[in-house]
Image 1: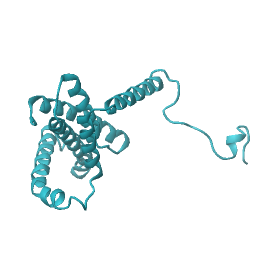
Image 2: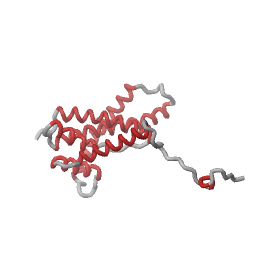
Image 3: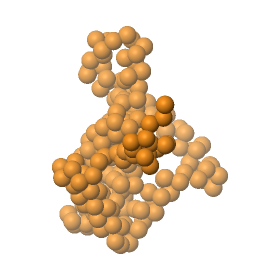
Image 4: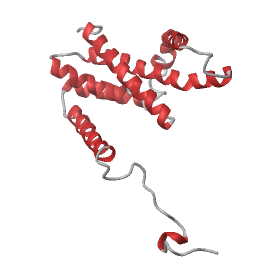
Length: 193
């Protein structure tokens, strides 16, 4: 069964770039990120179904590479401002240094996980639940068997896109709700003196 194929690596890198950009935007906009393993797994299953037959191992490679890209972007977006505050200004860093630190951090993360895998995943299999990893594995297994999972995800995507377009472009409703509370909420002309 093929696992490490060129198309899996290319698709994983593409998803890593896309979800990395989304992670940076969301982190800068809202101050938090979301994990991309499960959405990337679902998208990998959907894309490979359109391209032809794939294996669960290829889908796993895609979600691993894609979520690694998202994780590195998350690490960069949260640590770079701290470095800027410590260094005292924006002239301290340039893009080459940021990319080098991100690459070194990613490589160190992988190198540290190799010896820790046996202790944390193999030996502690029944004790540590790893809920996201378990859910991602279930998604990959369900995708291998077939199902309506990708259709549901894409329906949610199109619904969210339509909502956003109507909100931002159509200006049908505000992004945040505004309402008054207190004594003036019911009686707008009432004043307290």
